[in-house]
Amino acid sequence: MKEQLTNLKSRDWTETRAHSSWQIFKIMAEFVQGFETLAKIGPCVSIFGSARTTPGHKYYDLAVEIAKRLAENGFGIISGGGPGIMEAANKGANQGHGRSVGLNISLPFEQSNNPFIDRDMSINFDYFFVRKVMFTKYSQAFIMMPGGWGTMDEFFEVSTLIQTRKFTQTPMICVGSAYWGGLFKWMKEVMQEQESNISPGDLDMIKVFDTADEVVAYMTEFYTHNKLQPNF
Image (cartoon, rainbow, N blue to C red; front, side):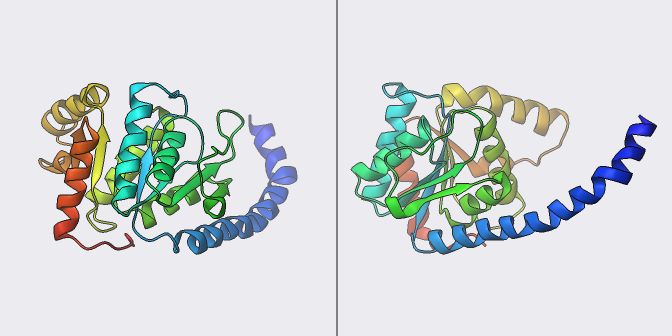
């Protein structure tokens, strides 16, 4: 191990530092493209969820309905740009005649642009952290459909930003009480009550609904009393 570390320091680490310096420009380019594109969209909602959910699945159809209803109410829809729930969100945006944005990410599997993204609103990213900044800066609500690792990453990222007030208080909605119920039970009983790692009331910032009617009604009520604006 010591010999390996010595060889790394003497041979490879200099090349790594040089690569990292040039990498800054790639990261900057992704930020610039994202900011310039999304600044045009106006009020919008990010919808997250599994890339593996297929058309005809209840959560796919529900994501289409939610996105369509929100688009009809004037919101643009932002998704991760790929298949599954992301495709459903962009499809609903199209059906509701709203702006349809796809923030795609280069992956070795699963991810490819879905056909429902507006031609001028498709952005490809290499870096997850840049992509998440785009989601969080420009969305006036975050809707979490059932999903896997990526959705959970986005769930905890957004909830942390809201809880720490790093941006404006923004609606965060989980759809599917049967899917999310176990996680919320654990967070309440273990994180909050047993270990006191979150405060009483922290979970109140996240709503859990099962229907498009509930989502749209909550969004309408929230923005009757709150200003639409970028989060930071």
